[in-house]
Length: 100
Image 1 (cartoon, rainbow, N blue to C red):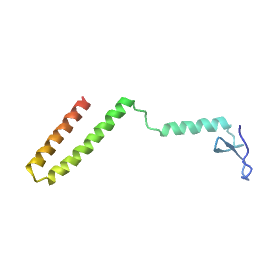
Image 2 (image 1 turned 90 degrees about the vertical axis):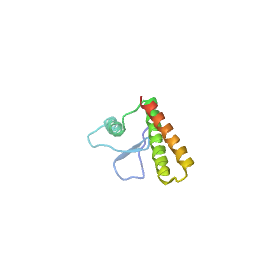
Image 3 (image 1 turned 180 degrees about the vertical axis):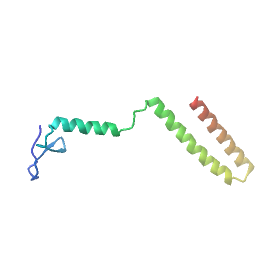
Image 4 (image 1 turned 45 degrees about the vertical axis):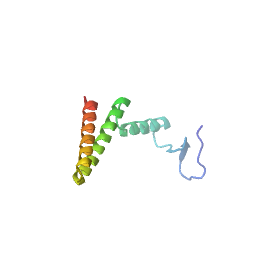
């Protein structure tokens, strides 16, 4: 259960690793409830797993696309440019499939 922190000279209680002030008009349970509410308000809304995976894949494809576009700007050899164009088309096709 709760134990008093004897090292501290303040009027406080250490409970489950949380230092909580006591005797200030709120019960311990109210303090814990308020802390939990503040913590849950700060969290981002939960996204379903399938949507999160889809969004992560789209972000990955966007990074790949920008990298290939940069390489395409510097590419000189026709064969290399053709390979990069095919890769770019494949990325765009996959992104369209994921979006629909």
